[in-house]
Length: 250
Ligand code: URA
Image 1 (tube, rainbow, N blue to C red):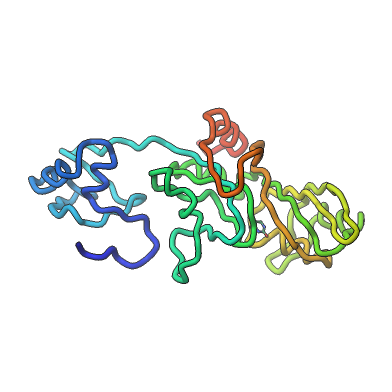
Image 2: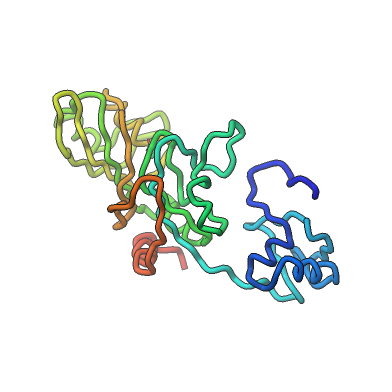
């Protein structure tokens, strides 16, 4: 078999795409391909190990699109140390190592840094990704922060008002002091933007540092009792709730 083209695209062989769609076995799929019943992006393809990009290529059998896949929405409790990417050239663990049993190709809805843990959504529904991850839709993301110093009420007010970062001022945030220990403060910070390492940079802008960062909520969704490293499917109500809070343009 030809090796897949380089890059991070979600690729599967044509015979696997057909058999995974639940239409028949791999042997049957090979026959359909061999007898010229299958097209990729309108072009006749007769090699079963032709690489198909699951997100970009349209596959038809007898000119009919192969069955629309069931839409899946996963809530993963990402541990630290995992990258929100498909493949890492350095071989570090990625969130895909945690969802292998889901049996479907999915994309993350937004990202979490390698050293951030918490709630990460993954789905095969690209409209949902657009609805929830697009910062214009202003969906709230809530983080639990352990800061490297005790943080004063004045510092918290600065976070609430918005701080100036290298890429511009942040919008006002909702900030709640959860508790203080002898040396550290624990804050809950809710923002609607999603800039790179935003929470870490906000806390640095008030003269402290983030020691631990956990995303505990997206919109009305909470991580709840899910064990770290595990995932579960969202309920239909949860999907609707998230889309309601981030309405797609008509
Ligand atoms: N803010 C950060 O600093 N990191 C994340 O992963 C998410 C938000």
